[in-house]
Image (spheres, rainbow, N blue to C red):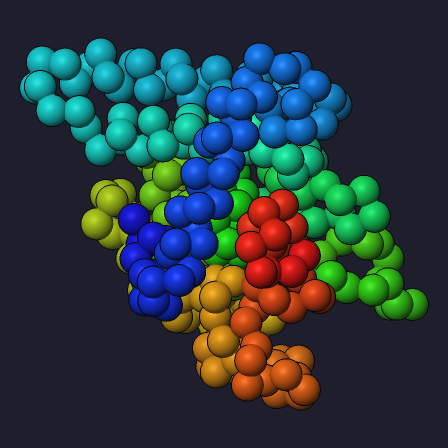
Length: 288
Ligand SMILES: [Zn+2]
């Protein structure tokens, strides 16, 4: 998994932190598994989204069974089935998370996104209605948030801001390609139909960085993933262990990282202006 490899690059301590976080969550689940009121075992999908969430989950399970049955003659479990297993595990993890999640809908012509509603402390998957592939894509980012791959900037409301949402930071090439591969495993057409100035993708191998950078928001539209901008995509791996040099390198147009008073000791996960899952719930030295 690219996400795990990325963490390994930052040395032993962060990996130990991640492993202890996973162990802690697993232990908590075992310990409180039979208690419906447990902080760690409740369904944290908001009630108004639960029926829709379960319906989408069922469609993924059905497709997984269909692909599995069609492949049984050849013996090996196909990549699509293995990925859909990971998708279902990720969805279960999100449901068992202490973080609250919900589904909202974007209109025709808009692209899906994941964002954080600060006042209500809910992470929202903003998807196209009844679009399973889009649901898979955005919830893959939810899993990345829980692994410390993506954080959300806490933005205080100003006159220009109409609401209290905050978008993700730390979204890098690896994170996006993983989300597209996971949706591709469910529905190849959902990828083939995307507007791309380079070429369409019809195979897993074609979901690469040049393809990602070629994605457009319409025929001859603007490119969706533009490195170097705050709302774009980071061209090198970023996560909660990233230091000031890594942040400055990938967000060159954002003065935020060039004016930090604590730049020598800076780590993204310790930045109080960001919602960071591992720091928020596991208190392993990384702040909310
Ligand atoms: Zn994405």
